[in-house]
Amino acid sequence: MSYNLSALFERVADAVPSRMAVISPLRRSTYAQLDERASRLANHLRASGIGAGDHIGLHLRNGTEYLEAMLAAFKVRAVPININYRYVASELASLYRDARLVGLVHHREFAPTIAEALTGSVVIPHVWTVDDGSTCPVIAGSTPYEAAVAESPPTRDFPGRSGDDLYVAYTGGTTGLPKGVVWRHEDIFFAAMGGGDPTSMVGPINTPDEIVDRILEVGIVMLSTPPLIHVSAQWGAFATLFGGGTVVLPSPGTLDPDEIWATIQRERVNVVTVVGDAMARPLLDRLAVDPQQFDTSSLIVFASGGAVLSPATKQQIAELLPQVITIDGFGSTETGVTGSRARLPGAPIEAGTRFSLDPSSAVLDDDLRPVEPGSGKIGRVARRGRAPIGYLNDEAKSASTFVEIAGERWALTGDAATVELDGTISLLGRGSASINTGGEKVYPDEVETVLKSHPSVFDAVVVGAAHDRWGEEVVAVIALRPAVSPPDLATLQEHARAALAGYKIPRRLCVVDAVVRGPNGKVDYAWARAVAAGG
Image (cartoon, rainbow, N blue to C red):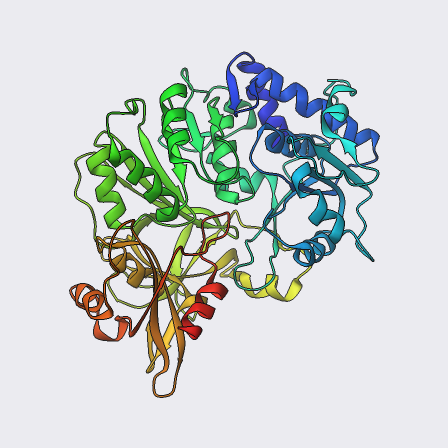
């Protein structure tokens, strides 16, 4: 047996068939039920002529259908493609062409935008519609998703599956067009999906058969707030399923703090995952209104992936949920999970953004040599060994990102960091987002963390704007907490000076109703720069 994702899941499903696998507002599926529905859909895909290497777009909000469709595609050696449901028709058409989709599974509410994208040279032969209660006209020739599942057999004879089968994850596209990152199943399993170690305490499995031995006696119940179009949500879900745990999905759409806390109470959730302060702060602010309203005693871990939690947010977690472990996970679509930082109950809260890297990761300088601990030198986070094959349809970008160093294959990220004396790294942020002011580089993440520690600031993004003398000036775009007066620029500057060098202090301030972020929780930097330029 190989490290094929669907084959690994089948082993777990056979071992704990009656255990709850996925809970959503519309359906509760045991492992046996999830596997059966995925197998039925896989047989329908196969009967439709879809097989090894074919790409199937998933234009879906969160729900059991998302995980069913991913597993079904893997069973027939096809490749599910994550589609950002916020894209407009022109963006969809570009992604459809780049991904060369032969199939598309979508919620009915998105049909009008999809139909607009499916014009001219953009043709997708097979379309399946998931009914969501909307009244939008269905796409001509599409097949009802539930009919495809119900009318196909549950047999599980899927030959040829391998750890060499492909998993493709499209990046969010916040800086240019999105790109598909191509992984082998075996590599993504170990690099991002837990490697068969659900507690992260034993180490990865050594053979595929060993995954059954690692199933926890009492499975972890994990609530995922981010959309499954975001890879960290996919990775967390599959890591949970490979350990025999339960994935809980709240109602798709706008984050509803009342529903999240009620679900944590009702389902006895052990782990809740978010994407940074943008998701954590609304949840914590709601809990702070009445900390006794919801029973949070089952909660063990409050985890963030895709964006770090600020010290101010961690302090709020410590006060409201003193029993929980707070974890920041660090990684990228191109590397998988490269590191993490955990704060145990009662431990002090660190001021910066520091991570412990896994043994396969390092910070490399411009000459692709490891940065010496304590040197203060800035390098790029990179990972060796289990890395992607490359970018889909982009050999030039693949060659510059995935390189060979001393006979080993490395994936280079755009994440800038320094290495501390103890071997941990201080993450500075994306190099592409850095601001060059008077020849000095300012990394927005560092400044944003300080700004968000001000009691009036709910959210913040820092960008550069053109300046005649300095080249760029540092501009803060902030959203305020409810019912507070906006602090003036001088007040925020004074607050920041205690933690930042003078050249990092914002020179201008723009106050907005809300910081615009994508469904993955990441800032829309094009929007922020436009605000800064106009302010």
